[in-house]
Length: 142
Image (cartoon, rainbow, N blue to C red; front, side, top):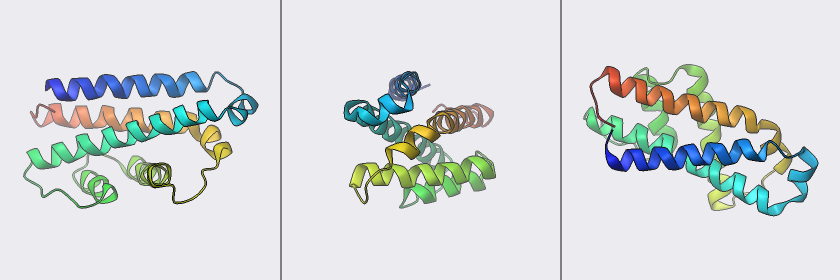
């Protein structure tokens, strides 16, 4: 694995650890703690961006033109068989959440974020595992 990818993977794993740590807090504690909400939101962003960036890199290594949007990147990875229908759809939704977080399109429902955090962690983890497995099968060095 390239050093830059290893560094990003380390940061991704830290992000997942911080998200898991947030789940040790009760829902009530989470909803009352804007600092914790900010930590969770930032690390969801880090996770989504790593999945998209690694997907983009794999597409470029396969000489597939880089799509213009995050959603299109995931769609191309899905077409290649990197992601199954379920992960592709859930990543599409996480990209939407990431866009809300980054661009402040709308208020973020902290309740919904907290309630879905276990699934968010699972989807991000599975997506990265599938990207790495695909890279290895294709002899790519991500």
